[in-house]
Length: 159
Image 1 (tube, helix red, strand yellow):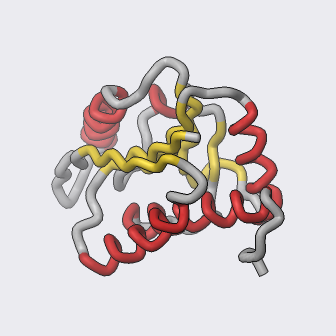
Image 2 (cartoon, rainbow, N blue to C red; image 1 turned 90 degrees about the vertical axis):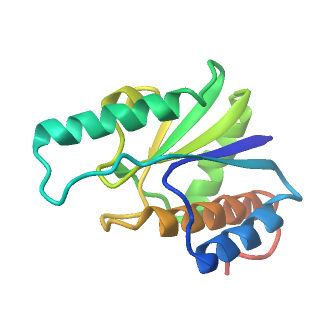
């Protein structure tokens, strides 16, 4: 299966890149993983709702350039559904069975994702009510994809 992590922003610090690289290496035995990063839109300290709308639209256009018609889209969103590891594994297996061309996981920027991206989602997934920095969210996402695959295959890891 081809999996794409499409993220607003970059992993700048070495420790984030190293943590992600570890899970990317683990995943390489199961899926074809690629990462696409798009620039986040700079924002002033005090942002009006109109400016937030502009930022979201601008980032959405950058993300949409990397989407294909047959993609299965999973967005990370605080308002999404939360899953225990075993339940996530079942959801992942269900998404694999949908025969999407690719499974694309989208991580938004500081203000989330524009409605135009949210409407395209096959699944909205939440890691809980807390807000994670996008760098940490990417690490948690890679780990959870790996964990879900291992659980689905009955391989040890999740305990």
